[in-house]
Image (cartoon, rainbow, N blue to C red; front, side, top):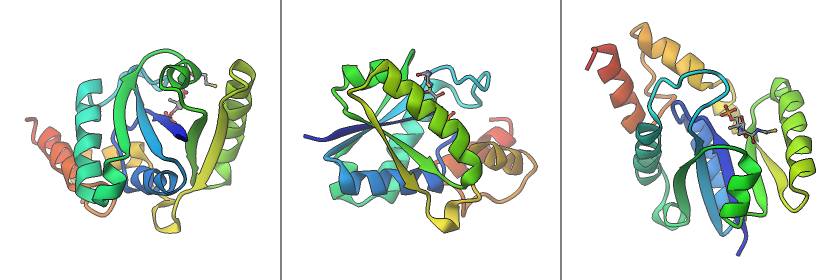
Length: 167
Ligand code: PNS
């Protein structure tokens, strides 16, 4: 069984992330989306449990059943490679949107490989139509009243709108 962990902040998940999930599911038997509890970027906009819940809903909404049944979502703390070991995953999956992502992703891949030589990193090029997307931009647009329906799944758009209305 080829198991891959797709780690990230997913604050919130976008169609770009979901594209990477579908691509990874075409290659691996199981994809475990690992939601980092405390991203280095600072306090998350959505609490951990909400990010996990939203991703599960988004997978149900956007992925065909044969993909959805092979995708798990779990939060984790600590090192990504330790999470991989716990989940018996031999691979880390990451998406590359543009050349600007490459440098930090290369550094992370090399570091993870140094920490855990048995875990390899596999990159998927995010689909061109989603390559401009980032979670931070989505949050900014939603906060300023813009429409993010083409950027995030309905479960996320609904929550961003509710936050905007102070709910
Ligand atoms: O969605 P993000 O914020 O780009 O994801 C970054 C993430 C979660 C993959 C990275 O910060 C990470 O792996 N953090 C866990 C701590 C860790 O393992 N650090 C060493 C990685 S080189």
